[in-house]
Image 1 (cartoon, rainbow, N blue to C red):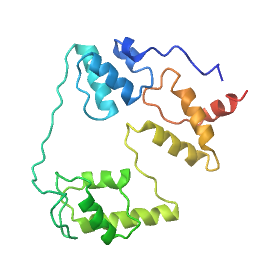
Image 2 (image 1 turned 180 degrees about the vertical axis):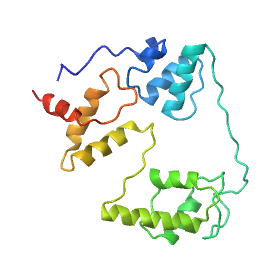
Image 3 (image 1 turned 90 degrees about the vertical axis):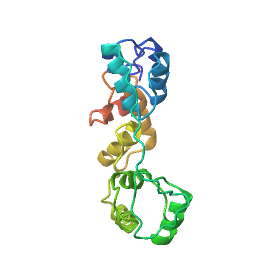
Image 4 (image 1 turned 45 degrees about the horizontal axis):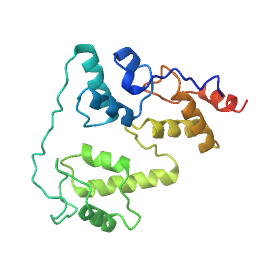
Length: 206
C-alpha cells in the first residue's frame, strides 16, 4: 500500500503555478481555500474555480464571475403548476414543484441529480414532458439500462459508477480503497477510473 500512498502532494496553499495545480487531484474545498488566498471568486463548480485559479497563475488576472439573471419572473414556490406549465430560466426545486410531481408521477417521486439537470437543460418544455422523462428514467433503471449522467465535477460518483460497470460484484470497500490511492498520486487532476486501477485495490493488501 505504501508504494502507492504518495506523500509528495503539496499543501494546496503552497501551490503557485498551473503545472502543479493541474498535476494533482484537489477537492472543491481545497480549491476554494486557494481561491480565497488569492481573492479569486469562489462561485460555481469545482472546475470553474480551478479554471479561474489557472488563469490567474498564467496571466495574473482575476476573472470576474458573470452572473446571468433569469429573464422570467415566474415564482416556482407559489404559482399554481399544471402539466402545461412551461419550465422557465427561473426554475427552482421547491416544495411546490415536489407536490406537483408527487401527483404527476406518484409517491415514489424524488429529486435527483439526473432529473434536476434535465430540468435545467429543458427550458421551454412543459412539466408534462418532465413527468414523461422521469417515468422513462425510472423504467430504464428497473430494466438496468439507465446510466445516470454525472456532472464532471462529481468525480468520486463517476469513479464509483465506472468501477461497478466493470466489476458488477465488486465492493464499496475496494473502490474506496482504490480512490484513496489514486487521489494521492500525481497526474490525476481530472481523475477517472481505469482498468489498471484494479491492481491497486489488490496490491494494497500486500
